[in-house]
Length: 102
Image 1 (cartoon, rainbow, N blue to C red):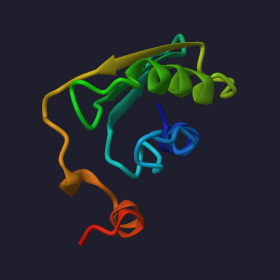
Image 2: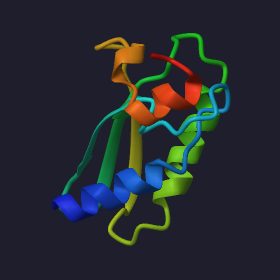
Image 3: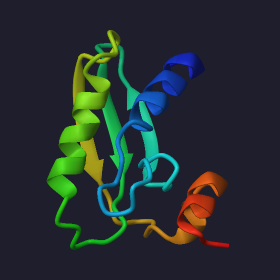
């Protein structure tokens, strides 16, 4: 996958907002990796802010919806992982400012 396509995918994922925090999943640092094979099968490896996140299903559905309009994406797999564990250090500067975290 070329860098432009990866940036396009990450840009689409910035439209997916964590309902509890009101910040997108990319700036929260929840998206660990995006990969696509030659057939267009796209795998998003990501985590959630907590293991017991009651909105996990909603976020996964929103990820799939956000990527559905990208022509190169033919199939979407969302892999929720817990290692490495998410921490506030993974957030972008934008997310930290928006949430009032220093």
